[in-house]
Image (cartoon, rainbow, N blue to C red; front, top):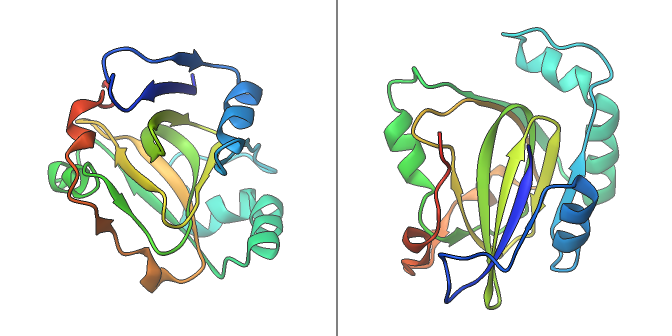
Length: 181
């Protein structure tokens, strides 16, 4: 189940609120400029579907978002627990960072934890199948795929070269809960 836990940055042990209804999650995140939506496929997707098949199943939503926000590139990323570099890939984005462009992810399958650091608050967004999150450019955040990752996600980009992580050097991510497997 998708969820949003909101913490004050000084209290990582106890969230101020925990939300599990998509409408409440979307409304709370919208207040800080983050987009959260639920999408349904226009066609069934079989396990092991190709990138082209996955994109085709969500083509109307992708095209609308690309036109609305100016995204020019779309691809699909998939990671499973048997990936030989899963630990390195997980570690790559566990520290607080930001990007020069929006980070847009739609979870076709599986899950991941996006944690956003906005002003004095930390928003831990557990994204699962059918969840779209769009983290605005410049937003401090980190991502955890868990020790045993399992997800398929559609990614949209304004400019793939702008998607390089710029680490903040703050150790805040180490103080907040990780994705439990």
